[in-house]
Amino acid sequence: MPPKAPQEVEMPGPQPHDVPAGGLDVPSLPPPKDGDEVQEAFPGESRLSPEERDRWLILHFALPRTIMTCDMAEGRSTEVELNDVLSRMAWGSIDGRTSDWMLESESPTLDAPHSSLISYFEYVERMYPSDESMEKEAREENIAMAAQKRGAFTNTGDAGAKFRPMFDQMVKNLQHSNKALMKAYDLKKPILSEQDAPEDPSRSEAQGIMRFGRHQVLPAFWQLLNQLTKKNRRFSLVLRSFSEEQVAIVQRELQLFCQGQHPAYDGKNKTQKPPPMSGDKGSRDMRLIDANLGRFDRSACKLYFASRPAGDATKVARPGEVAALAGAAAPVAGGASAE
Image (cartoon, rainbow, N blue to C red; front, side, top):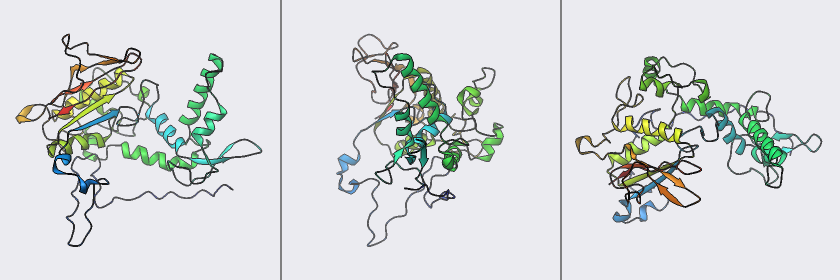
């Protein structure tokens, strides 16, 4: 299949029911007209009984690549992670003469457009194998080289440079679009490498959270908590990560969000403020307290909660509270529950 000529990528504009950028209120869908088919939020919703519609939700989230765009345990920045994700959704062919990978797909897709194509991610894995039969030094070198190739996928001159508009759109989606908020914190170009903006202890907590000029925790996560709380849904959250540092970031932002003090959601600078989730005004307390920070020992298959009294570590997410877990080889954040 010959390579296709580069095409201009047309990004979709706002849709009638898009959530305001960085906002919390999801516009309601218009009620169906007589004769119209009822729209389901998910397949089979209309067949649920009233009891099933109100069933307790237990929502599990890994922090990297789910509600955050960096992986602190692996040392992968947001820039590297965005490139890596696109490398898994870019499909091409291998030049039989040079063995180079050539991009064929016009846009990122999870599935190959044609069975003859191979993703750039898989191509790099083949070029730099890292199976257990290899010597340790050679294996580690290949792992590092493969990660480097994927992490620079859309850079100028690299294999996926034609996908740079998609990368730029992903970055734009992470930015704070509220001009008043940007001005209040003097935010300019978003910082994609977390190491380039270490936290300054002399600055305020709000400034620390906003220092990257973009969201660290994806807005969709806050929108989910906001909507579930407004609808009085019973739910628990289980958060997990191999990095205790990453858990601590979410713990801090979650606490401020629940208290209505998160700098991007505090009602100031034209931002929207969520309903109370801190126990005030009869609300459920969804903050992640230290007693609910735990560690999962995968070798022993046991959970440990250092700040809990002996004999009180069996339940991860108890009604009306938030918990977090960490593993012996990996920290795990355990969830929030709302009754």
